[in-house]
Figure (cartoon, rainbow, N blue to C red):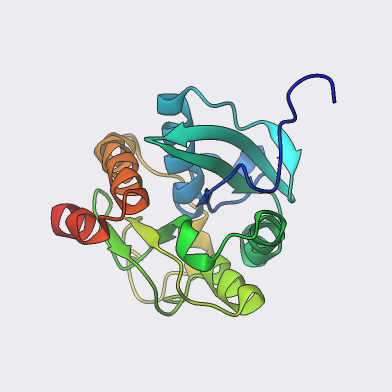
Length: 198
């Protein structure tokens, strides 16, 4: 009654979700590429993603005319769907209005790829989101983290390794492009986003 209510069921139109692992030891690791992109977007929007809700760090903001909830699930990567589906159910948001930022080992660092739906591509966070929501119609921005150095290299060790300084520099441009791509997707122009950045 008194003061502004931060959350109401009809206030948020879109979820922007960066996937990663919450512990400090995972900062700047390849598997946290989604977290890193979301942090950039939050900084550009002057949104503090520091409140705990939906098993995530969250913050509200606007991208263009659209009210968004920025989310960093704290469930660890493999259970990301718990956080995402909880927020989807609360706001009654369909999969098409949930943009997921995630890492992709099949893309070089500095590259990104936008998909509007489809399989998880072997990414366990996306796999859990699709499984728990029952939908694969999530727009997603895949952020390249580079291929394993050799076929025998342990996959878990690779995705949990840290980006080099040069790679972090290459990611800066990707983060800018992620923000622009999210804006286009929210404005109903995903084809333009794909033409620009795929």
